[in-house]
Length: 443
Image (cartoon, rainbow, N blue to C red; front, side, top):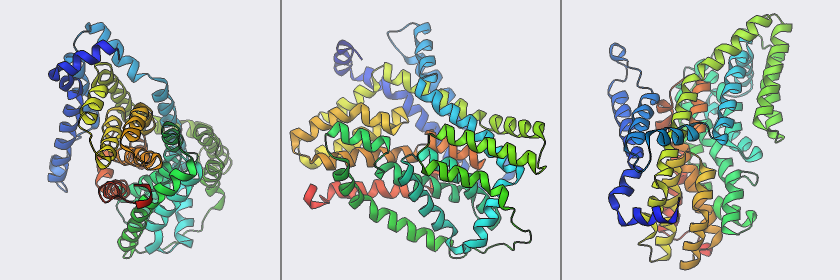
């Protein structure tokens, strides 16, 4: 944003508040939908489709109407640019491939075979903590939460159905574990950007970061172990078709090898077609039909993602992100305050961008200036940026990972949200680390 526009906005509080008000409108709708959903639990007679598309529709229209200093055509063009941004389109292609792969694998029996194999070798009481550990390990190995969600959510949803458990709980265990690696992996985008902007070594940042989040991971693992203690394994009457497990095993192995997630999904989709047609699960047209149904099933999530991108671009264009940065940084006076301001800064910008890597990139240089001015250890600053961005990204219902998980599990993002224990836990641990100056050596 131009310097002149920023100065005008700082002199005019109303303009700054107006710039970020679409986010407020969105949050109000999300809260209303959540309250209604909780109040109507179990009441089938009043089942209402409170889709996030409605929330984003109202927030988007409001954002376009309230934008000042631009013609209606310019506002719509800005919205369209955000909805069609290159990084967003990449995510939409992943949605399409993931939907096609999941539907093809389900129709040929790959998910059922993988679930049966898991139940045969893993005690029911260990399924929930086992899924969390698997998500932590895979995300740490591949450095991406998206790849972890794609690989494990369909299996988790199938296991929940077979054990009579809640699908949102099992899905949330995968999403939470996916952020373990997103936050700590040496090849994660967030780790790379956080260490580069704060000019510290990845190994040093890892040592600080793991001391902060390891207690959270252990606590959540214990919680999952207690929650899974009463689960019973259903009787397995059918023999396991090991050939049908191949697509998911291939996806897991290839993902761990570090191959691009789109290539992983394409290979998995091809294996589903070859094996499904060869063993008679469907003919070639049946495979095409399964892919089509899977892609259509992702339609709502694609619409939500595009409307989110458009609305957030309007917020950025009107100076909303710059206004947030100004509000947070103007009253910093102590080292603890500096760390809290960095945490608040990356969290709020993440809310406005729905992308943790972009959020760190946006505020990284400012965070470094704040840290240098007040003596914040650069390794701690990098950890704060990474951890709080992962916390917020893990909890917003319009984030890429949440939308993708919801689509693959065939549930709504708002159903997953209350079960996301790990993102909540790392946020609490990180906040306590700032308040109580932990770890001491880096505080």
